[in-house]
Image 1 (cartoon, rainbow, N blue to C red):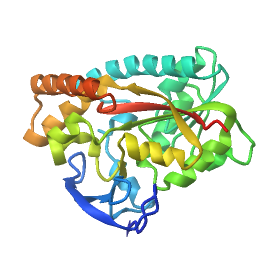
Image 2 (tube, rainbow, N blue to C red):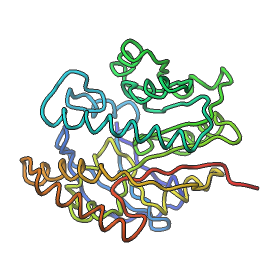
Image 3 (cartoon, rainbow, N blue to C red):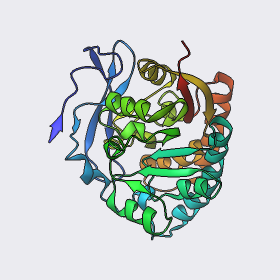
Length: 297
């Protein structure tokens, strides 16, 4: 079944305008509508599959976040880039948070948590995908829960909570952030990475931009809409960090969606140019990491 948003989850406004019609190039080839809030500018899929229906849009062996078997050239490149990304994420966590307990929401197969654990952090994960959750437990030997609510009754608290490209997948944004805040220690750090729909590559590729990834990506943030959302929950931006590799990865997928074939040279050129343009504007990288803390009184 589908559901339709009647109020903006960020500002509560009820006035929306059509923004873009986008196809699910990854899996179903279905068309989805992205609307924009007239008040705060948040972009979101509307109408959208409900929480029971959304699962079928992840049911593919090519869903690379959970792929543990296929070793195509693209996946090999992805996995090399993933290890580089894991080390970079760890550096951000290590320099932002006290070395204590970390929770990774949407942890996939657990490689990031395994890396953190090997470097002295206590780790916990949340992953709804059964196959990925089992792999994380059996191969990477990390504790993983099915749902965030599983952690609430036990009175858990964490020094750092991360959501690496997960927030855009969450149906109930506000309830999720409320739960995160309740699980975070008073001086804890909340780290959120999201695609930036105001980046140069997003504008370049339009409805072929791979990071729209409808309907799996329910929301499409820029700096302002993410800042407003987290501010509503008492958080403030402590640091903003670019994910420069994402411009190349997204451009590779976008080229394939646009032309029907891989064009690595064009993807490299446009990925480089997107990063160059973002560097001039400051907040315009293809994907960005927000390091958040509670607002000071």
